[in-house]
Image (cartoon, rainbow, N blue to C red; front, side, top):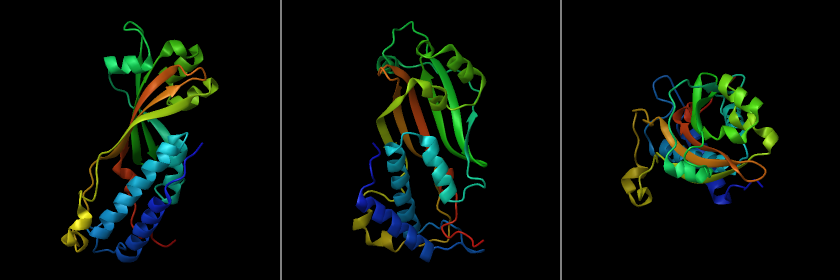
Length: 232
């Protein structure tokens, strides 16, 4: 069952974003995301909001597509998968233990990007057990860019996130006790790192056998929009 966001979190996100819209409109001589207190508060609230929505969602793709549409990241706002052709990354002993496989059991590696237009919203690594999939499924995973969740949908998969970590906080710890923080106002753009937050999860089949372990990193392109959208 989808868990609702905490009401306070919703109000914080709404108030911060509304304040940003009112006070930090993009102009030709001012960055859309200036390094100000209001911009940092808006970024903090939006990261927390999206993180909670993804944790409560059954599919990250649908959540990201809704975000892409509501924030006008692309037209049309369609999220698609781009497979990254890279070398294999061997699973760790801890990953094998979570997947409940023997040391000699084959585990395959797949890396993809979820994109909306020319923006990369997230990158995902996937370690999966091919012996627990149908031959047709393994073929699709080897030769196409179809998302893993869609390929294994006939197995009625379920997801359990076992780790979630915020990688960047726009506001430092104790900011509410620092009077100078609320006076922060800069014409310089707000510098964001490439990675905002990450999730680690296991995907199970209907018999609750682990099918795959996922590592997802959500990127700054999620916030690549002006705080004041331009009028159509």
